[in-house]
Image (cartoon, rainbow, N blue to C red; front, side, top):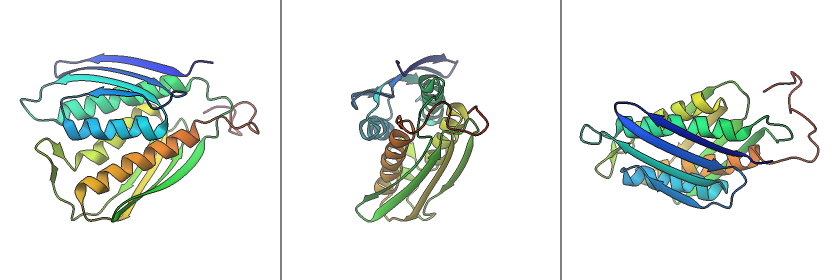
Length: 197
C-alpha cells in the first residue's frame, strides 16, 4: 500500500507543491526561500523518515508569513492524504528530544480531529536570522494540525537559544509522527472504538 501525498496549492500570495511518502527513508528536497524554515522542514523529513519534497515561491518582498503559513497548510493536506484509511497504525505516540540546553516534548494522536496545545519559553528572541519570526512556530503547527486533522501537544519546558528551542520542537514532532503512523501488528482495522478516525 502506497502512503504518499501530493498537494499543489496556489493563491495570489504563494505557489506551493508538497510531496510526502510516509514510508520513505528521510530523503528531503526543500526550498521555500526562507532558510531557517527549510532547515526545520528538513528535520521533519529526516527524523520522521519521510521522503519530503517542498517547493514554495511566495511574496517574500512583503515578509515570510504567507510563505511559511501556506507551506504548512499544504504540508498538512499532503500528510492527511498520505495517511489514507489509517488502518493498522499505532495512532498515538510521544517523543522527547533535547538540543543542548533546550528540551521539547511532543505527543500526537492521529485522531481525525484537529487540536493544538503549544507552549514554549516566552523570553526567546523574536527572530532567527533575517526572515523567521519565532511567533510563526505556533502558527505552523496550527496550520499543519488543522489540515492534517491530528491532535498535537508540544511543550518546551526550558530552553535559552531560540534556534535550539524551535529545532528541538520539529525534531520531536518528526519522531512522534514517525511512531504514530507506523504499522502495529497488534492493530487490526481502524485503531478506534468508533470505527473511524
